[in-house]
Image 1 (cartoon, rainbow, N blue to C red):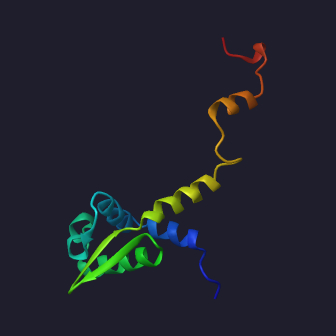
Image 2: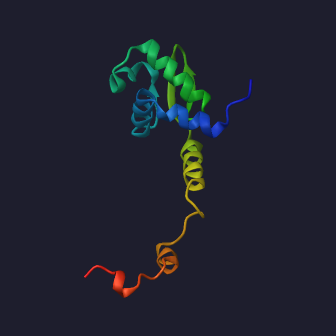
Length: 114
């Protein structure tokens, strides 16, 4: 079986509405106990645990066990990875707006709307 590309795994993890809700909840706080994530996404604890596992495997969240509780926080590198993927999708890379205007073909005056 072919291993899943890490970018694909990242995007798949974020594509699920429940996982995205968890990530948004974590983005607003330094860390959250797994037991407190059921309210943000309206699912039960076993489902939250499953989604956290997927996010952890994709490198989106980091986990720290403290006794019987596990606290989660966003992996600071996840946003950078996502930004890199997004930049790769822009044709020609990020081009300043002024350069794009210069590249635009001139519209003949007869073709311009009055």
